[in-house]
Figure 1 (cartoon, rainbow, N blue to C red):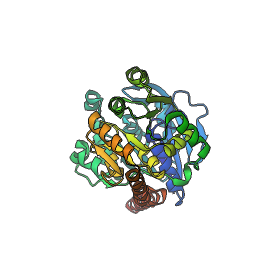
Figure 2 (figure 1 turned 30 degrees about the horizontal axis):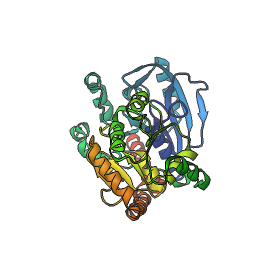
Figure 3 (figure 1 turned 135 degrees about the horizontal axis):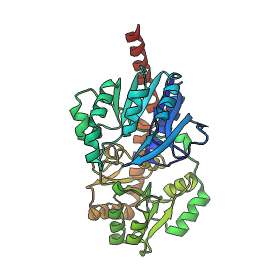
Length: 375
């Protein structure tokens, strides 16, 4: 079976949680017989076709970006049509309004599914103009998938469409991550300390990092913030003068997992629903780390069970964040127990095997139904 995933950006042009989510879905489904490709945009799509381990990547040219929506030229629609003829199923990753246009104008009669990763949070005015296109796009979708029950329940749009919505969580292939590098773990512990807390991700407005910085100031506990992004300079101005707050910039996978191995716990303080899932939480779970996240009615609390795999605290609340950090800092036995529980939950729900099988079954069902209806 041949499937094309459709999203506005992809590796190597950009690095982010949703790009990683698509990569992991491709890897997981490839293990059960799915042949994947990715259609995306790039500011300089040379070459137009990239061959990666997980998929063939087809890139059109991005001519403008409006409110975080990459838009391609009319030629991109024809490029997409040519690719569509070669596949059995289209898999759109929402939100990307131009992706809806691609599906309606370039998808032809091919069946498609939509994974609804996130509501549109910031661009409310533009959303009103776009709503009729979105409504038509979702009416034509064969299946709609969300990544957690909580996100479905909390999404006004998903409740309003009055259609069945299936839950298939994001996944992470345990064999995709690097092995433990003990020497590098020691390097980071010598630099930061034996008990520190780790955030990894793009530094965006919805990540709640102001509250993590304030919690670090309150507790004096060492905190590592690994990543780059539009909030970098403002956050450095806020917390850079404190010796216990370490901004280490972008780290490669080897150093990222060494930091995960070295830290006491992963902190994921996102305070807005733009944070739909949190792949970083899965990365921490694979390394058997306790997790600290916030209750924003999304998949973060699907991954992290309060009191079992870590702590779930109210969003935008530095005091509760600080209290959770102090509790884990002072109780190594609790941290170890919660870390083991997070790994067991990962294996049960979020492993590549579990998620790959669920997507393969869904793809097969959609394609079979489409072919039967076309006879």
